[in-house]
Image (tube, rainbow, N blue to C red):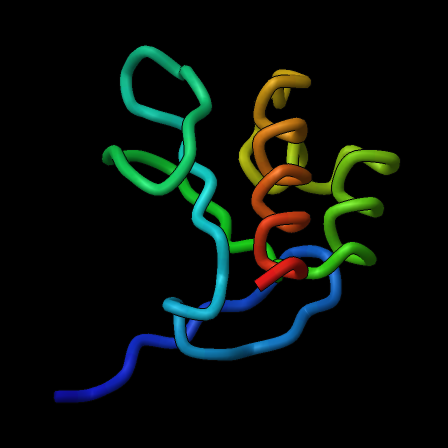
Length: 86
């Protein structure tokens, strides 16, 4: 089976989609959630640099064409801290 590749909208790194966090703007409700749902999605590198730039410069919001709630960023920062502790 062929590997599906995705690109991070922040650093433009291409890798298999399993290496990224998936952020989804669900259709038709336009709610933003992590990992599941159908709609427009962006794949973000699980790195502090990409997450910081996504939050500061609203690059993730531009990629999804919607406002990203602060709770999404808080959840991603927690995931990052958990991954670094393991």
